[in-house]
Image (cartoon, rainbow, N blue to C red; front, top):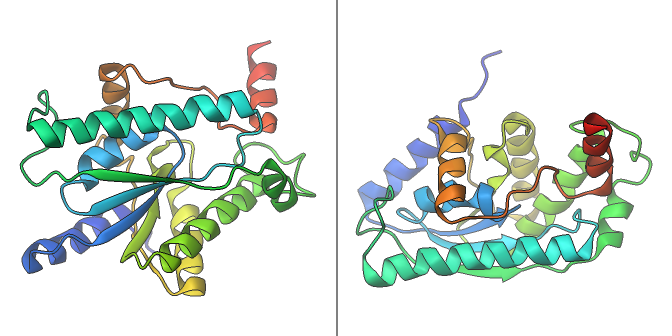
Length: 224
């Protein structure tokens, strides 16, 4: 069975929008500012984007607040570029559009309930699948309620995240709520590399664990 190239699938979608001269509305689930940086730089040329910051898996509230404020700071900087037309040599053009942000409910208990029984799974395993399902289901629900044309997530930019699994879950949640899923694999075509460059350019806070205490514990064990 041939693997789907989700990056090419995204490009095909964008080509159809460009032919029609349309800018579809997109609800973009964002996990953090560094991962968002390239995704937003790229997508804002083709979509009217609202970032949906929904990450109850970040179990430490000060860590959560730090990350969400970084997301807001990055979006403000990008919007200022659109206002002034000065993109500081970034990969953008006159089609770049302003970005909105919507912060979801921060209820850690929702995450703990979603992964109940999977706490001991290794990072990247079934516990992460349950976490993806939680965040993408909420994203699909909000996108459908808001009348968006599409929804997707920045999570596929990470080399540690399985794009096939994320796209499958996103497609399932889209079908459940009647909202179109936008396929992606943002790590392709040096997207992850570009996110690192942008993180340095904007001096973004880059964490070294996904957010849950389980991944933090694994990180500490590797470093000890």
